[in-house]
Image 1 (cartoon, rainbow, N blue to C red):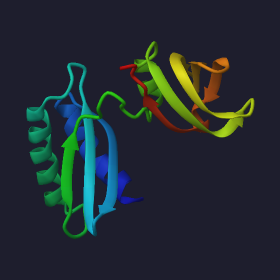
Image 2: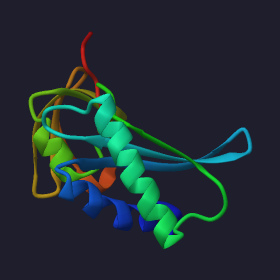
Image 3: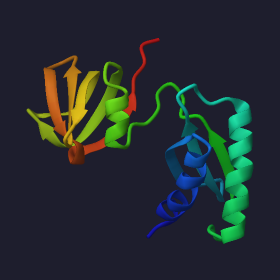
Image 4: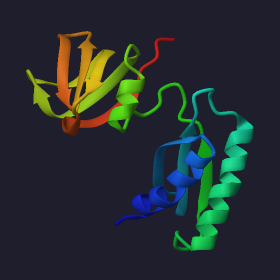
Length: 151
């Protein structure tokens, strides 16, 4: 198991106990330093105080369990208005919203889709693509997906 999976198994239950959803984790190296990014959300939205409180909670748990090797920087933030969609429940939650989806295998010669999410259930996501209309994509065929708010 990798670092992201180990941290997710440790952190997700802590956050859920606080009514907060773990949206995404990233373990990257930037300028020679290790950075753990934790993106969190809740129905009423994330505030700066939430990020600070969850950062302290996560940091204490990671230090106690000695989960990460060496020194690292911990960043806790909201996922932003263009939040990543990773789980099938994310797609279901945002039905009716605009999204961008990149597929692994082409569907009718197309791998990039943008439009309103129409449904998400049973391992399938349907998007009303601006180019080709309604397209149904197997969840396992999705490489990347994000909300695409019109600003």
